[in-house]
Image (cartoon, rainbow, N blue to C red; front, top):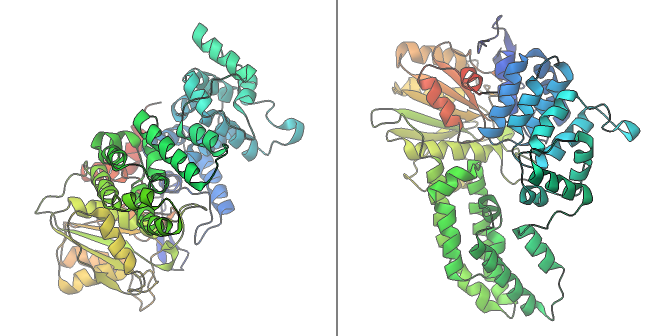
Amino acid sequence: MRFNLLSKKRTQVRNHEGEKAFEISPAMELYTLVVTWSLSDSFYEKNEDRFTRLKELTAKNDPVFVAKLAIYARHKMYMRSVPLVLVTELAKVHSGDSLVSQMIEKVIARADEITELLACYELLNQRTGTKKLNRLSKQLQKGLSVAFNSFDEYQFAKYNRAGTVKLRDALFLIHPKAKNKAQQEIFDKIADDTLQTPYTWETELSALGQSDFKDEEARALAFKSKWEGLIDSGKIGYMAMLRNLRNILHAGVSPSHIEKVCETLSSAEQVTRAKQFPFRYLAAYREILVANNEVSLKSVLTKISALFTVNRGCTGEILEALEKAAAASAVNIQGFGIKTRVLLACDVSGSMQTPVSPKSKILLYDIGLMLAMLLQSKCRNVEVGMFGDTWKIVTVPKGNILNNVQEFYKREGEVGYSTNGFLVIKDLLNRKQRMDKVMMFTDCQLWNSKDQSNIHSLWSRYKAEVAPEARLYLFDLQGYGKAPLQLLKNDVFLIAGWSDKVFGVLDALEKGRTTIEEIEKIEL
């Protein structure tokens, strides 16, 4: 089945700011919602309303497309929670074939996602008391049974955690048939709660944290030794290392161990395998900047200053490693030669000051800047700027992706907090500046706080008067479900998501394929 990016009626509507906007197809709306999914209220939409919209769109769309979108979100966009929500919602409205079970087999990529899916199913179906997980969907059972045979003892043990649904509960509920004798032995251990405690950074540090120490110095030395042992073991994963850089610095590990950490972080191969959101590198970068000051303070306030003084000098090495990691995540961006004229415009309005999750310090503002700087690092003929009340072009050097984001971040407030994206196109018109690609990183709630002009009509004029070959790419970072311009008309395209994989979609669009066609390529 094919899905047009435009709705059949091409209905003109209003966005959350009351500005002229356009409806998009149910398939495109579901895609933008899923790949920008967050379990927290957005600026214009409550979490409960987003859930309702996702349920309605799941029912509206072709079931095969929904299944492929869930797999796409999990493996291409690195999403974890929303694919499970799509599985649960699709299981409510679709039956009669093996689509849901096939979907589950592809979506479940970690052992803990078995219990996460059951907990999601319980919550979204409002199962309480004696009705908790009885009468489970047969297709859900079938898919989870296959998933149970996909993991070894270490993987089960690593994620054998307390929760609403425990791994042992899931085993008794699903009754998976073991694929061989070895697998049956693992199932028996899950049932008997005798899985061997795995060697992970969590279990090692947890055990150490419960120990008694004669004084603070002994404690600090023990944690230093433990972190060095974990780094030497190679058992600390890339994401865990990225998220624990501050703790590693505070532990005062040796310069040789810092070097090992930096080698891992900056390895192009490790970056590819780790599948991190680009903004994770930015978060780590900022943590190191904070940790540098904290380590300096700690060295003054403690009797073990030698441990911390050494590592203050290592922060520059870690920052450089994170820059290399960010650059490695952009290595596959193609199509930006010296003759390709590119404009990158970042929305820094008030609605972009929304955290991506309840506990995160990363804002939509940061994601837009990060994606723009990744692109800027690959473009050879580029202008970069930010818009709010006004539009300003900002010159930043090549490379140093994370530092460039910080430079933009320091200038927060310079252009105000409206969402006057029309000024980007108006400036191009006034300067008669020809661009091949104009890229806007925004929540798509563009409006005009100054006069009656709008971006839709300005872009039509720009195409007619200045640059007929120009293409406008809207990078939707929030997925509210409406577009500020009519898609596919006058070379306007919509891309959504927070992963560097959005550039794969960009490449597909450049080659004449649509976003939806990229999702349809996913195999069930």
